[in-house]
Length: 227
Image (tube, rainbow, N blue to C red; front, top):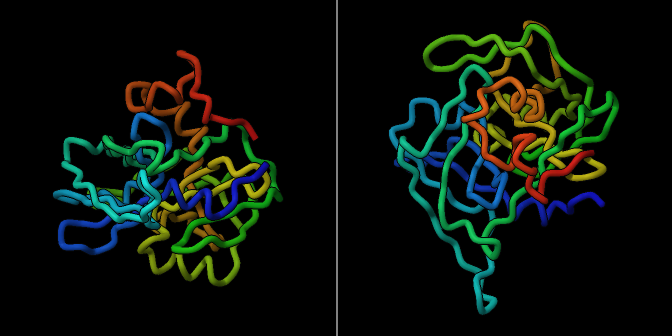
């Protein structure tokens, strides 16, 4: 059964710089506290602050808001993949709940839900080719990207950046994460939207960069799901 938007919201964090400006969005991917986001959200940042996208319910039923500072040493940048991992602690199940990670390649025409500051509908077009990511240091060619058909509102949200950067792309039927949005991904032609598929990048990136529960061995986390 697909996740409801409200359920998916509980995994999202707002990423801000030390001046309070929004750099993007991340999502909790496992119970070890790994937050996944776009490389754009962390590129050049001296430090970051994470904040839940919505108030969380603590023990006793009271809704609370909190922030968590992130040091540069807690960030694993993967500019060659257009992604970044942020190591955190203290994200207990009663605070944030990880999103399940998809392990299958999405079919063309499959429905998708995208976080761009709010949930929007989209459609998977298929693998994209000739895509590059423009980081602060240089342009990186990306071997694995996913093209999406978006409504006008979705295209505008990606153009503006902000919370759309690093937003997850969910399978509209199962709720598993298919990829991560980015506004600095360029196909050299008109495309509705582009995302980095986690399945393909997890296979291509060095194993040491990825949380243990994402590897084929040891045994995957129960929250990892196939669509």
